[in-house]
Length: 205
Image (cartoon, rainbow, N blue to C red; front, top):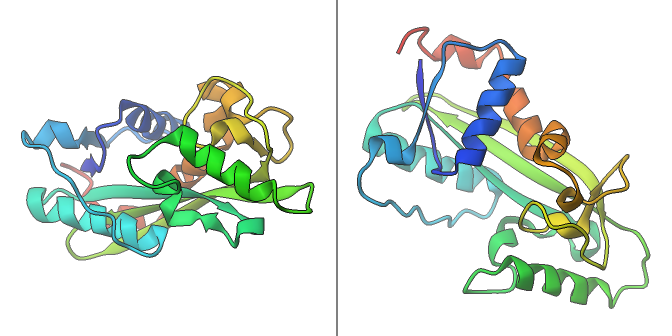
């Protein structure tokens, strides 16, 4: 079967393939946007939830390519901030987008709080769309936010997020360590082990 992954990020593709290997899935050919489209495509993420944004991307690419598509949307939810930045995680500090400025804004807001422990989670929603059926798969990673940056790996808010059960931030972990527990990896696992999904995906491409 052939699936289109709504990204040109090789890291995301590798993450999907690694988890497919965990579940001994061998009959999926995973394509990225550049594999099927020569022109650059920008899909405006106007949804108010991760679910809505994931569908917007999956639907837009399916309408163009007619290939069953999987798309994801992710973000950070901080309880003390009313689950912000949420769907605005990538642009929390405004345009132009800056991971560094986003982290600075989060730290600045939390420094005003009387709390010492800032519970938070990363959340990913994966949407599968084939023109008829739509399925969603969710993954989370619970943890806490710290008020100083630690680590040089990763991106986004990784340097200020410590997952539950660990002492290191995501940015202090190797890619392999992070992928074992990350929100996106957990969502991909839900997708990979789903029985429903294989009832609607043809067994051959």
